[in-house]
Image (cartoon, rainbow, N blue to C red; front, side, top):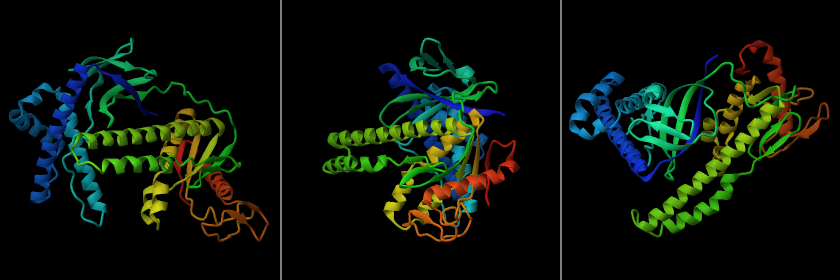
Amino acid sequence: MTRFRSAKFRLYPSKAQRRQMDYVLELCRSAYNREVEMCRKAYEADGTFLSQDSIQEYCDYVLKLEEPRLEEVFPDCLNDVSRRVFNSFNKFRQLQSTSKEKLVPPSPKSSERYGSFSYPKFKRNVRLEVDGKIWLHGIGEVKCVVHRRIDGVPFSCTISRSPTGKWYAVISFIQNNESESKISPKGDNPVGVDLGLYNLAVFSDGTVYDNKKLFDKMVSDMAKIQRKMGLYEVGTAEHQRYKRRLVHLFEHYNNRVKDEMHKRSTEVVETYSMIALEDIDVKEMIEHYHTRAGRRSQSTAAWRTFVEMIEYKADEAGVQVVFVNPMYTSQVCSACRSFVHKDLGVRVHECPICGLVIDRDVNAARNILRIGLGMQASVTGNRNSRISI
């Protein structure tokens, strides 16, 4: 089975290289915005969606004549810009066909929202050196922290700039089938996992991963910076200084969340032989939640990040992941399967039929495990499967 993976490396360009990378990024953004405007005009005129070849021809025969500086950008980078424009309008067309509301087509991006350019052909444009450097076409050799080995065939490289001004190289590659996973499952026991807000995850064997609520801890610091930033006019030096502090705060928060999710997902894959998870749509849950605080708690619980990390790590380690419909898993007794109605405020499951008294989330996790085990035989051979019941 072909596995597509990516590795992210931190870059430390010199001042001259940083200016050159900023220059290339700005030219790519300019080409992107011009192509988006051309596609918007075609759509607004008669609803036409241009093909990728048409967008690329517009860049080659029109934009380069009007903007000679684009000749300084490697052609493959501009081809990737055309691909991005086509993909954004293609996604807009797909969403428009299923949405009942009128959607707005893609619009030009500011320098804060356009932060990367790509080399779609790795062998011709990029070379990863053994002495901790990466060679980029048009940029030269850039100091790079190579913290892992590319265990496969690389096919593209994306150079990205974070909001805090840090540069990264994201190398996409096809992983070798014979490559060994860094995670070795030690356990031989299946488990069901119930995701929640009070606790991040509760397992059918009683294990609990508490929700550290990192976002709530950041809110007070964020409010202080925003209050001070609001004292100054937009565009002033002081306003920009506090804005940079706010961006650094969000980056620190995102790094803490990713670090926590990596540690916990690795522990789950190492411990259990089969993992049954809830097949939940986080976006739909947030839209239907009745309070603002509840929507914020759900959006910052990092469920999606946690589940996605479990999925790809389990795929590499050979651990089966099964997704089940979570409907009524909290209401049904895991011992006698009787229906016991409970409101969200009731945190203890008390069955009047069999007398089982356990935590509500543990009961749900046991039901998820039972459903996953019952359907496991029907998905043998498909390592990661989604099951709806």
